[in-house]
Length: 356
Image (cartoon, rainbow, N blue to C red; front, side, top):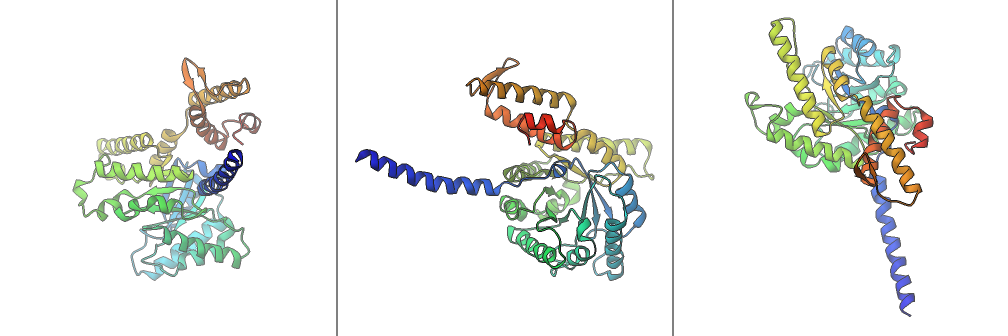
């Protein structure tokens, strides 16, 4: 009788825990390798064709975002039409190489009908990787965008779920809701931190902003954790101090040093890349967020040795004088997934190590 009771108890546990596991797994977003490479986002105003063309065809960016939000004065319909036309032309006519093709609509407050999305998806949806959506406040807003994209894909015969989303986290409310935002749609391929709008949302002034402020650090940590909880990269904020021509050589050098410092801070926090606004920043971001060769080599060796340990019946082992277990192996596989996406390890080795 006791055995029968135990069997019933275990069967019940299996049923409810299987549902739990299914729910946990459903929250993880399986990214195509190209979305793991977002070391440098280059944002450029959609209204200026020469900037669009240069960013798309000449930059070292992994992702180029054609901007319809900040680059267009509110209520200027003429510039809005010009920007939309340039976005469509860029998607349909330019050679983007391996760069991800994104644009930024004006956002919910300025465009509650999702007209920017509708116009561009209708004209160039098959060439579009995704959109970076500004000033998202909660998960329902993400679901609304998802619903619009689903309807547009169906209407124009596009692959379901093919157009991806990266929410911009730009307020205290968005920070509070960021885990729910991250889990709101399987279309997400990144979370982006907009630190200046975030700072403004706290009622702060420009003079008190600094990249290493504790309030900025708290937001960074929460965004990185939320992105990691669903398996997508977090992208760090813009550094707006540019080395412009009107500055002295010393001032230009200081501007690039500030960007370098900001990028290293973001890397230390766990961000996968950073927003940039000019080519020099873009090249520096790619260099800083690139995975070093020796780190990849250590991950390959560690993964091989752990597979050998498991094959011999051990769940933990010593590698280079340090204890290694499944947690260590997960860290190595994070590195190897990115290395495979970058073409730094080939498919045969990736398959051998269980990365693909």
